Amino acid sequence: MNKERILISTIIPSYNRANTVGETIESIVAQKVDADIEIVIGDDCSTDNAREVLEQYRQKYPNIIRLFLREQNMGLGANWAQCVKDCRGEFICNCDNDDYWHNPNKLQLQLDYMRAHPECNILITNHRTHNRSTGEIKECKAEIDHTDIQQSLWGGAHFCNATIMYRADFMKAHLDLDEFIKRRLSLQDWPAWVILTAYTDIDVLPESTATWCQETISITRPDSVERYAKRLNGDKEVCRYLGEVFPEKFPFTDEMWDLYANGRLCAKAYNVNDFESAKKYGKECTGVGRIKRLCSQNKILFEIYRWLQKIK
Image (spheres, rainbow, N blue to C red):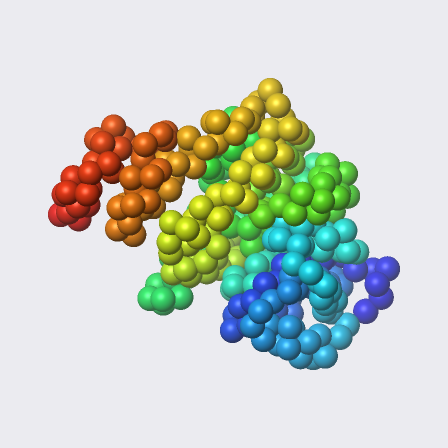
């Protein structure tokens, strides 16, 4: 493979998940595409045997895989941003280390579309979800609100990160990757989408190409209030940064965030039956109904509320 001819780079930001990353890699290598590709993997100081697994795959596919072993933990957003800087392709894709591409024609379909539509800078597709605990797989349609796509993303709209393809030049021109790294941002996909959609729309290809695996417990699905609070602390810094980039559209204050976070933590406390946390965070919060807030301050009412929700 001639490095000057690499057309598509795919990023895998790695942290642990030694048991799933092999499936991710093999699904990329199996792509039937008329282009040279590379897989850029940044391992962010995994604590399981992921590095050993990744090294085995680098030896298996030496002309495709470029493996970067971080000397200290950078955080997901920073690790991803460094991978973007290391990409040599004209187009950049993502595939997290627990997701995989089930359609072997994904890259060719997207490459053909991008070539036929030079105005397109970001392209996503339909996807599947895979619950690894139950084995259930569902087909999902990618839906975009084109009236104000940036606002809809800020409000919580989401799509499968593993389906995306960016034009590298556009992406690198509008993302301050060094800022992602300096701030050690905890998220990579969502802040990138919010920033980039200030300058472009997102096109949708109605083909199912990638599988978004949804684990029972993960960074985005913490199993305790304490872990969720840690995740929200990271989210807070991401939103603070976006508030600085777009101060008029997305104003940010610590007070606004704390009320929002308290509401999310109160709701989580109900889900995991943690009365003390519900009482703590339910005192001052937004996004939680008045009755639910009142019940969070009394253990008997808390238990009654949870019981009523179960029998609905």
